[in-house]
Length: 109
Length: 119
Image (cartoon, rainbow over all chains, first blue to last red; front, top):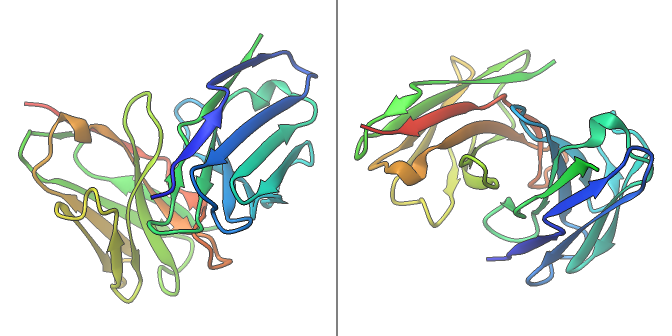
């Protein structure tokens, strides 16, 4: 089973700043088979990025994803107040579909 | 647009069976793959299993011996049964749809339902 490790566990930033979240896989997820989700308290996860770098429908362009193989990054170019949440990565390159990282909490500094 | 809504008991006794249903509204359950995913309080996400509208299933190996997912296309819903539950099964349970691209990420989620295992 592929294990995803996200870092940092918590990231404290201010609105307007740039956020960089990392997701590392224990083995290759098969090029770009990686998704990112945003989860706010009491809400279901929302798909942000798939295929490592493709934005889902309706996702603002301040969200961007990059990487391949084992190392991936989610970047929020300029934080808005509504961006403070928990972010999860998920690989879908191997069975079982849908192993997730443990999450990065993005909090207001 | 398509929406998912989980329903079922919020409290299950230890050693009992957890039973949840996901109702698909605004669209047909046919042609797609549907999953159950759970999240223990304060923890991350765990995929439980999936079902195709035809009835084909696949389960997380760590839960396989206790999980059954079924589909009722006439009611446009699918269900989860998890047997022999313990406190470790306490979690928010989500139903979700596999992405329409055919890859195994999830583009549509229900709001989730908290199930507590306690006597």
